[in-house]
Length: 327
Image (cartoon, rainbow, N blue to C red; front, side, top):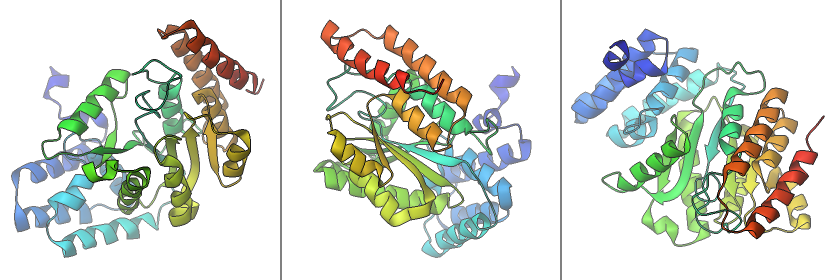
């Protein structure tokens, strides 16, 4: 009975006051309009400071229908009110030292085999990926500032009714990802890889204004402009970027991979290999690396492959990456 009476915000935190504030923010978004809504949201957000503000933003951002991006960039109508709130976020971030990164991940061919990847059965959640998301969320110490740091960055359009984004969320939820936020694209952004990358970069810029206290880890793939995204993340956000991992679905040659690695963009064939790179960069713990490897193997063995040859090819890559793990 108690679980049923709780708000979604209360189920996400053990801080009743933060849960109350996050719930109030969502109620304001849904029930008020115009200047009244702007004033109420500004009063709520400007009254919270320091680490509590970061935790409140994270809590608001887990709301499925109306996250922090919607609140700031859609629901706030007056530009001067929006700027006051963003300035408040920036001022408070300057006083914080949060070691945890936010994880930004593409969906198609990064989380789910969906477009250009023929190495796996269509619709596969890549072996070990969920364990890697969890490992990055927990950080190297296993004692993160906060959890739920996963945001999906996709070129899929956000339609007026939320149907496409809702479908994406449902697919990811069925895959085992329950706590997430999503930054979507538009139909025009599907015209080319560069336009897809441009929209993702616009979303990252806005995201950085919402969470300037965090650094970033980006997971993408080699099939749809995510390498461009990785390059531009370093160019535009520099020290804020901890790592870029590219799931290689187009068989990039070794010389090109090495050239990108020297610029901080790491191509990987499996999420065992991705976890090893993250571990070497101090982003996950020894135990987490072992768990990603174990879960990746278990996930691999559960797959229903399209052909024996498909399984053999991927097994070779898995065995190579498993052999590279530290003893």
